[in-house]
Amino acid sequence: MITVHPAAQRHHWNNEWLDSWQSFPATGNYDLAGNAHGVLLVNNDDMIDPGEGLDRHQHADVEILTWVLEGAVEHRDSDGNTGVLRPGQLQRMTAGTGVSHSERSAMPRSSRVPTRVVQMWIEPDARGLTPGYAEADLSSPLADGGLVVAASGRPGVGAAVRLANRYASLHIARLRPGRSATLPAAPFGHLFVATGRVRLTGSDDVLGRGDAVRLTGEPATDVEVVEPAELLYWEMHAGFDD
Image 1 (cartoon, rainbow, N blue to C red):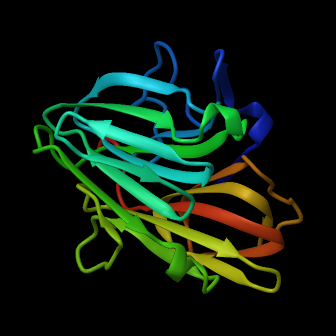
Image 2: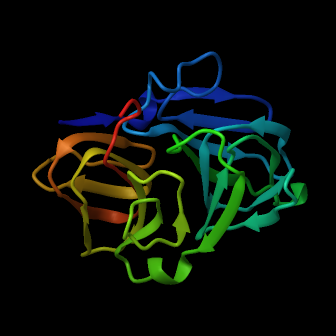
């Protein structure tokens, strides 16, 4: 089954400095587990004003991945990890037994340049893990134009960043005109079109910025480029309750 979730139909939340478009409702009193697809709980497409962000706050028992599309994000956490993420860099934070962190746009207010970031949460294999942090620069492998295994916990699967979930892999691609990508078969798949326009082979529907597709029990699926595009695809071999 293939279900398209148009960008305009996402849950929308904003305040003075944040404009958040959520493929799964995440702001407010929502049941993240009940709304999950596979082990993916959150896929937020956030636009942050320069110099603004979230002050120190707490997370536990979740894998949080952050992918910057525009601008830069500064991270600081209670384990002493700090860093500035820019486009092409992926961050993973294992919240485990508990970690507090802050996330802010690293762009100076005077620049008036907003930061756009996709933040994704997945369920870990086990609760009570030791908190951890990792980041990787994928600029070079992405320049080849193919699908890159950015993060994975699957046995035997090489990835730039390891996940604490043995059923999930995150693939990222920057597709140029004339290129296509094959989304691996999986019981659960989630495709997010971050930029550009694409279509699934055999479909006349064009997917654009912010559109998402949830795949359930589908074979390997080809994606064709309509306009240069950046894609994030979750390959998941278990559901939330498995």
